[in-house]
Image (cartoon, rainbow, N blue to C red; front, side, top):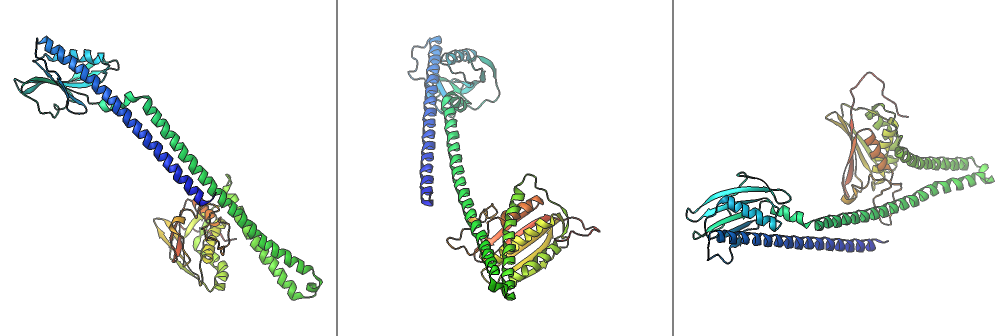
Length: 439
């Protein structure tokens, strides 16, 4: 599956998911509006019945044709012909709300047009069956923001929890919406897993191909050199024997180094990974690694500069693995420098931490790749150019070792300028012991 096909799949999937989300939101909104409309209609009918009963009780023959006015999403104002007792009004409201299945807490207020004021307000609490639990004068709101006519008596009804009530009435629609979103999340998760597995498959395939090539070269060289050693013309020439023997030795060492890289990662993947921790003089470690890698730097006319300014450089760690860490970082600095490599190793202290920086003037790492380079088998893509050898295991190993030492590693890189790897390790108090030597 090529990148173009993957992009098309992602675009189509995004469109489908977007359409499903929009459709679900649309139907939820429609369902909410319909449920709210049904509720408002029931409230209107109940309040109209209450108004007619009050008018009949007051023996009014000129009752208002449309007494109920909805002045807000939660507010209803009802005109009546005369004054009404608050208890009587409350009983009527409870009866009609129960008849129309309005089992929702409400507040009501009674307006007297002769006094031009609200003469009664109360909060009614109902149970799930619509029966009265209690009434109180607490948590009352002001009368609806509605220009009251002074020509008639009125009462207002307010539902403080209407939105919550409407949502609860939608029932199955809410559950279906949650179900759809869960399905969408699973769909997205599955897509992510598929793409991740594809990427891992590509990385591992690349690793196997690269490993085969890396092993094939020294093995072929050793095989050819061995054949030459067995020739009679070579046996009579000591210089040729030395040359082919040196080639076999160098290639064997190279092969061993490559195998060691893979074994180191296998060691770290083991659940029984244990480090042999002892006091380590990190400055001595850096100097020893520098001596070993200096020959390669000299061959490329490079410079390795040490700025070991830390006053506390003793740590508790596994010296073999920490040596490999420094070797990997310095080896990378050499490999990814174009010409005349300049490597600076710095140390300093901050808050009982030893900070080790490995800076180079190499090709740098693109910003989008910087979060990935510590992943196992990952190598920064270079197109069809494969001038830098390796398995993509070194930095993964480095990060794991530093983490096992309760430390951390950071990266700072600018494309075309260079890279700085920064290690943070806890220091220990200096004592009268002999630090562990490098094997």
